[in-house]
Length: 381
Length: 174
Image (cartoon, rainbow over all chains, first blue to last red):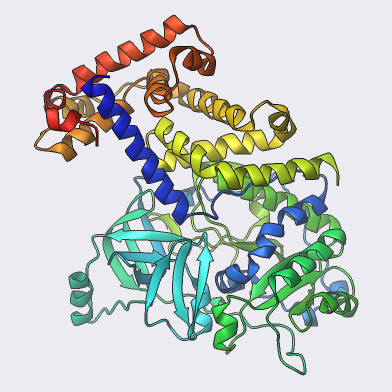
């Protein structure tokens, strides 16, 4: 073998080793399922891994979804007085082309500013941290952002992390002295050129998240207080929902406001489930599976609409997985339109294409957008 | 448990067990981790719809790997007619070669500019250590074509990395 051939071999192995490091850091990124758009139950089964991981996702998913729930007060909502929204999909859709992000573009991104173990500043999309005290120390775990929240740590696999190249302790100190303080662990907005998951930062400012990030639980606490569901209980709930898919609309896990450190440390929270049927009946059934851990709320939408939304979620997820965008959360509905409680941090071109037929069903909350996009990038808000 | 559930379970298990290895191959084929991830996801999202076929194959891993290669080649086809900006070529020709890092970068960029089938052939030879017969089977071509692809790729690399080619430190294996 010649020297050139040896060098080629070495280069290939270096590239492969890089992939190995990345795959270790993003172990939850590759998930696909056997698609079956005709059966919502299949999709619920596909949700099982999410259900199993719900405890881990909770901190991230809870508030990540809260902004989709602005007018959603299901437990007080009478389905009869809230007619179903127009069934999707519609031909008259408007894709947010201005929000489609390509590598090389100058982007605007928001998230928590963290310092990882390698002393790199990163933008971490960790909405859930607002449930507890602002973390004084944060770090990036193998599977995403890790923050100290309320005394415990929550890890969000698949949560969005962008390396902010160009940001140093010196630049941060300069901002503090100039009066535009950017706090470690606080919300910031970064502007810079995106390449992969790195933003060559040209501007960094503090940022105030919208009020709807602060989610309130719709159910009163049980007499003995809320309990942290185990993974087995989460799985049982998801299974039950899957076998009664005509009555249920997704599942999310909402961290308890003021919850104990141990609850937050395990990343658990109350499971919020939407139902098309009687709330009391569904509560009784699910409470047997996960006592004092489920909050059932009513959804004004029909089973057909929910199943359509299921299909849309599946399309979105498949598109998303092939484009490295991050989606979190579960299927939800809102008071004014069919709404999917998935948080997008980025719309890549392929994702946008797949979303086209469902654009009018989706509430966009995007954390990383082209800098030329409108200032407010949460559509349908 | 129906056939779909069996396939779904098999798929999940396969992905869990082989993602890391497949991502290595996909990355080397694509020349970049992000592109590799896209390629792998793209391939899996296609295969997932016909997973029973994969299960029926002698080796699911070999089936998926071949699909990965085919997908990579088919995805790259539009790029084959893309002209390279003159500035990029100039950059290759007159760039500074002051050390191993620059030389490696030079080789990496040169590899990235090879036609897809040539680079794929190199990957199969030097990363997966396949012989000509095996590469021909993977690419669906004749052995003579494989030799031609590799020979032309090496010749191109020597031309595109003249300074690096003279650097004995650079060319030594790690």
